[in-house]
Image 1 (cartoon, one colour):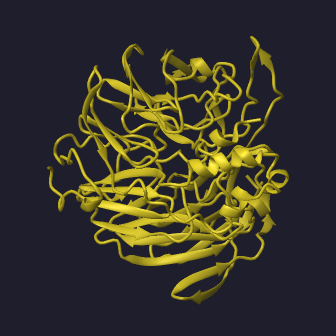
Image 2 (cartoon, rainbow, N blue to C red):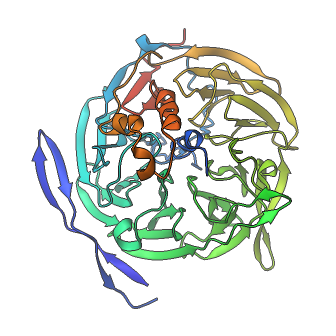
Image 3 (cartoon, rainbow, N blue to C red):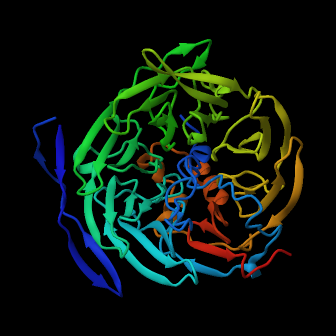
Length: 521
């Protein structure tokens, strides 16, 4: 085993922003114990919104939304009712972000953190902290990427969501740069996974968000090269353990394409508590694997699954979690993909653990957002915006209807007996948790749909340059222009809720609605 010696950095200040240059990572030994481009561009983006309710302080006051999917189902019921409608004029504050980002914001107490990248080669990695109360900027930190690459609409841009707690902030970028910051933005340590293990081999980028445990920050890297799961010390960034995730060859089964296990994927791992212990669940590219987060030991594995390259497992308690599969129109279903929208349970047995499939939602289809559960139903949304209501007890489909807001890239939010769906272009639709499709309202936005944000530096040239095909893996220029058109307007990447605040993330800004100020209308 080897561990990292945390890097020392050289800092400079420019226009009030601290920029940090890191030297190449230094290690010291320690002895001891063809996918469719237009569709794939969405996969690294919409993994937003994990596996637990909001962290609470000793006084019982929520500390915020501290990590990926924190409080996706907050179970606050009607104690904090939210409005049935809103519009851009109801926005309490907006905070512009330099560059572009696809991660979810996170919140700790009165601070909202967001990441973005800027520069033609995504060479600047940015972390911005703003006040939850009024949107004023508290600080901005800019770090130099140790693995720059050309920015564009076919590749992830600050897609992994940070994680934080009382000790500070842990930020991971698709360049492989992992940072630990304190709440004032000062760097505690930095590790370059690209320098240590090699650059990521995925022309569409990386999107998996880090996991925090009491001892470690854990990152999943599933790509075209050697895939792995690695845990780093929260204290100093040293490597605690690393588990290789080998890829097997492509098989043929019943005439369908079999995904190589642990290959290219964009889903994030999740912590699921079962049988008295935590299981680190990785749903990724043809496999479901549970690891011990303390050691990286494999606890169980399940490979009769397919299409699970995007959605993050959603913990329902009692060792149960939801899994979603995406069927890509360009190449048809992979083996098991039509059987992989399901409810699974981790079961303890004499020889250890196994995964038991409780039911399969045979007609449901997943997409870029993860499924959620509310009361007695689970909800899947397919790539065209059709929502499937599935009985949680039996797996029986109760309804399938097209959402007025259209396709959803952000994972829906459950608040009490309502489910909030956020369309890709920013429109929201609210459903009542019911065995029938019961529409409460729709058409709500925080931003004008005709708003056309400026393309990030370097992106417009890549989209229009026919000569970029060869350099970018052979993507046809016509397809690239379609991608540019698809992303020329507003894109809503994430929506989170902290108390009476909605926080909505677009590529270039954050909007906040405080419903204590904007009462129910």
